[in-house]
Length: 450
Image (cartoon, rainbow, N blue to C red; front, side):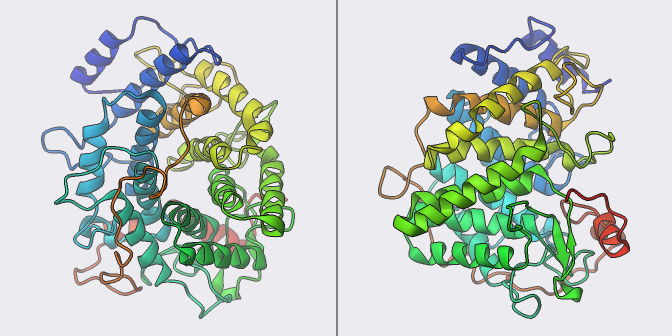
């Protein structure tokens, strides 16, 4: 049973008048009420705004990247529902974690930070700019500039020394996974490049997005049939792939490709349309009777803490794709609606009666709980409101966030060693996936989706 502090538990119990989430997927008020309940449950795990807490950090066992992803979901929450309850907490967290160079490389995380970790915080800032989330005070870094800083620092890490390019999973040589070039790190960069291009109309971003797409398809991290595989070992010149498939990998490329479709014409746009349809078709592996599930770990019940949140991002980016590539709606709306209804049925557990579980395919709570489970349900439920909101803005269509094209170019942008001594704890804290992926890749024992 989920355990919360007595104060938080009491507040949550007082806020609920039912012992389950009753979602009507066609009713705006019902969707907003359900999203509010789920968001409240998710934030009951956050201690960064409490006395003695560090803004932006979740308690163990959650890594830093997932906090960035969670604040991204709360930006979405405000965007979809108009409820500003969490806005101040979100702004405080994002700004506290920017680091001295305003590029989401804070000293308390840098020694264990991967490109994907940084990417999730950068994409949260990008979302804030796109949906006109309230801007920070002028004395603080601005959302667009923060996203640009992440992009720029990662562009400087593009690595031609192996496999003809791409980004490594880890930033620093001493971390396990430095030799791994994975889909999520490269996908975050692709996603961010496309969206920055859309917002700023600077063609350089689109050129980088094209370059990344060409690279991931050349090494077949994105296969000819648009399956997105987890990663590849650059010590083998990326000639062998880890064929495991995760929901978030498919989603991060889908939104980037949808933005590229929106910003192209003619034959080029037709190519992107084919790629989008291919990605959606390949994503059928993540749906059972139209209900989303994490195929690589849910059936065997061994999803780790990180993987418990991955469905949130496929839900997020499928919904977002419909605003920039409207034809995507016909491809994903039934999947997202049925998944939202199933997710709500999983939110019947815990000491509050509205705690969400991992498995949406069972029709009830599965006795699991956590930030990831709440975020998964939140994103798929609030995404039902996608037709009620405007699409992303740009700097020529109402965007107000101020940018800095050179942000992120003067800080710690290349692999190397920080000045502090590295501890065992620092080494253990790195990354979205664990070292077992590398062991499995090299040992050939990893379960694979062909």
